[in-house]
Image (tube, rainbow, N blue to C red):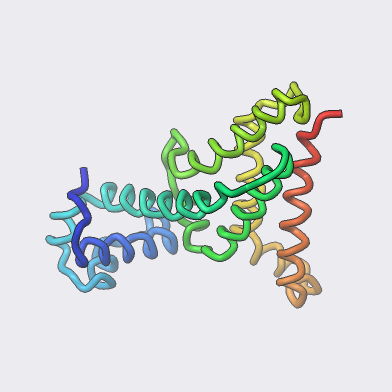
Length: 197
């Protein structure tokens, strides 16, 4: 269990850890690099986080908190469930697009319980279940599976975008427009895929 992060050094360590794990994953990250980036010695790092695993979990918790904060601002979503789903997915995609380190860290998160992705999954599930209750979302859709698929679609594209752009050179020159087209198409695919009748 990490000690309470209530001082500048602990927060610097957590921020450096987030960057290191996002860049190199758990296996490739080095505690020495994290300590150096944070401007502390390894002993202090272990004082706050006990282990590399504790440090990784703190980095994932920090990323999850950032994601929850971004989604918290989506509380003002309005309209019917599918309209709010469209707004939520757009907000989520745009936030992840602006935070590639978060996308990378979430891709490296090895938690079998899906904790880092729980906030957006919960919000999507609620909207899908509400839509099912109103007959707007297909009854044969499992809201949890559909929510996970929506996130995989977004995270997968953002994580693999350099590979996709480099495999089709004309697309690379059009990258901002490509990303925008992808976002619209991904949101449409999810919303239209769950729509009843």
